Length: 150
Image (cartoon, rainbow, N blue to C red; front, side, top):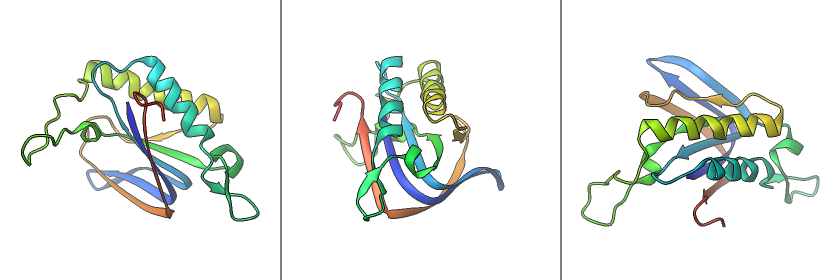
């Protein structure tokens, strides 16, 4: 699994012209599931998401996690995170997991983050055509790949 975490002042998902979900001060997380990913990957990424220290402390040093900052999380499934651009200019999504694997792992990731934070994770709609808006704070953008574990 791959995730892109963006520290945001605000983020939202709109579907069919209607606001579906939104957060203030927290994370906008794009979640991509690949073939071969497992529940362990989802749990590991959830733990990393909650414990990542990218919020400023009283000295202006990124030393606080989302729990310390009292932030919110908006998680959106995004199969394009698994694009292969090795050959040609048209991305291939051959490595992206199908619905039967991707939906349960995306949902597990969200549920694990909710449990660790004791707070609802706002979501997009899997497979929907969504418009995502955000104000990146910093900007801070972190990419984490569960296969690399770094």
